Image 1 (cartoon, rainbow, N blue to C red):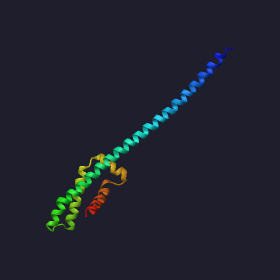
Image 2: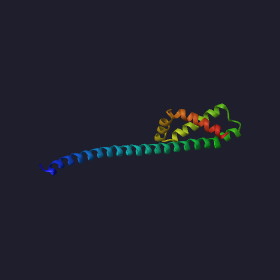
Image 3: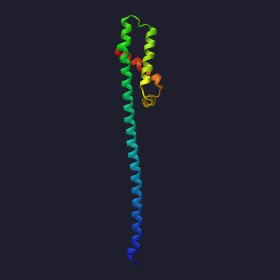
Image 4: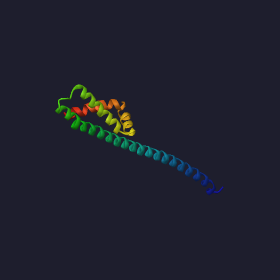
Length: 130
């Protein structure tokens, strides 16, 4: 029997097994990297949407404070009813300014409806501004 004839099928089997194993490992590594990049992209996108939303919220509240609230206070008309109206107007203005993607990002991140989040956030920003 020829040594080469015996060794050749063994080497082919070993090489095939090594290639198959390496290919499987490489596929798992590539899949893990794709998932990692996708998560980072999703996180970056959510962070961007939340940042946009926060800016809109705070700017809208500050604008209302600068104009409407200050004018009402100056005229002595800043009653409880006026406060509630301004609060409602600010909340509606914010909701009209936010895109559906931004609203979804807030609701998914904070696990509350956007209206509930805004109620708390508006009160918080007003308290910070005092």
